Every structure is written in C-alpha cells, then in structure tokens.
Image 1 (cartoon, one colour):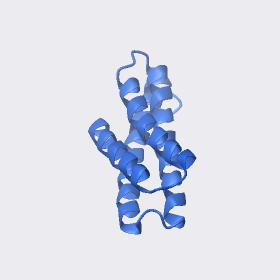
Image 2: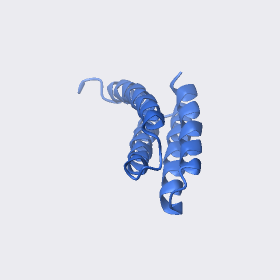
Image 3: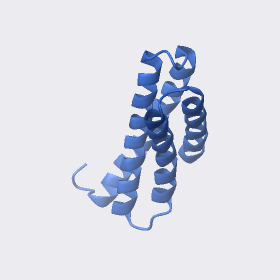
Image 4: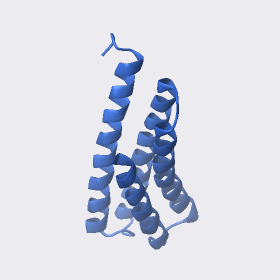
Length: 115
C-alpha cells in the first residue's frame, strides 16, 4: 500500500513542481526528491538483505522530507496554493509514517535485542 501511495504522491508532487513556475534548481530538487522517495522505496522492497532494505527505506523517507521542504519554500514564495500544499503535505506525512513503520520493523529484524 505504501508503494502505491508513494507513486501517486510522487506524480502529484512532480506536477506541482512543474506548474509552480519557479527556478529550475528548486523544481529539479523537488522532482528529484519526490521521484527518489518512490524509487528507493521500490528498490528497498526488492532488496534481498535486511540491512540493504533499511538503507533504501531510510533514504526514501529522507527524500519525502526533502520534497516537502522544497514545496514549503514555494508556498512561502506564493507559487503554490496553500490548499494544494496542505493536501500534498498531509499525504507526504502519511507516507513518511508508513515508511517509519517499515524502518522500525526492519531495525527489529536486524537487531532484535536492541528494540
């Protein structure tokens, strides 16, 4: 379920960034981070080793945060409407929480006595 939500969110974030008419650097950062969140999540899901999965899930979660931070800048510049941003923020936070669950489960699998 998190993979499906992540792909939908990444597409929406990409569309938001492309339509924001912002500088190329910010647009590319948001697009790259949103895409990376989805791709790393998928790659982690298909990795064989738990430690490798953990790395990909952690990277994916960080990319969600990066994309949301970029969007926050665009909102503050008045380039993205607040209702759209609020919806994307909420979806991103939900995905991040789901990824955190994956991370915690993987951590317990790798180090069962520490958690």
